[in-house]
Length: 345
View (cartoon, helix red, strand yellow):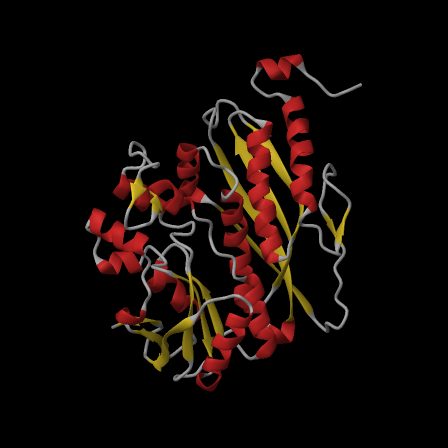
């Protein structure tokens, strides 16, 4: 007998819609399967066979995050197949800051009304993010919660686990004044600061379909640009040379995130003119009349991740990153200072 409850459906939860959604998302999940993934969707837990061959002291590294109020833009655009990339990116970009390779990912979707095609579209994006990160989508949860979420809205969060050899964990113990700071460009606003973005552009009411000359696309398209996933090029670089620190530039911008990776007595010295600021941030600052300090303390400003490498390895680092499809450039240097922080001069 198939599972069905007329009473539950009358309360706003359609069990059969959930089954349909799972069937629709299977094709996307299949794209993410890696050698360690076991089983398929439908179980109570996601299985992954951890291969630690050649590792002496494997350390598991986990990360979790959500997409945040960027989802409001997806609702206005009625476009749902990219926010899943953001969800994966926010987790796996954190994991690689300590040198870990992402292994598995799980998502959580909560909605007011479960529309199978919409949920499958969301998972399509999650699967694409997993493919970019080399992680298997081993499970997830879709919760229909009428009366808690508006009918046409949802929330999306995720969780990832990776592994790193203990002796190769990236920390700041080898950082020295004179080390080079390398910038990995962002694809846009990524998934941070959207409460301010929405206030500046008044996106609750503005037409997100309006074409903006400065952006070369509509406002909605620019704001929905998925977060860049840096996993594969960064891990490739770590195979070639020592990386002394990595910072994922998320909410809080330069001033909050870069110091998190600095060693005691070190500061990040960056020339403002060397930062390749993207047009969307120039438009945000101009439209909202936002002080520059606040811009750099809220947004990534065109830099999604920073790496610290020995100065004599900097040119090679740029070459290795380029060989792995990642644009990069010199952003600054590590200098001596009494208190960890960023000097933007």
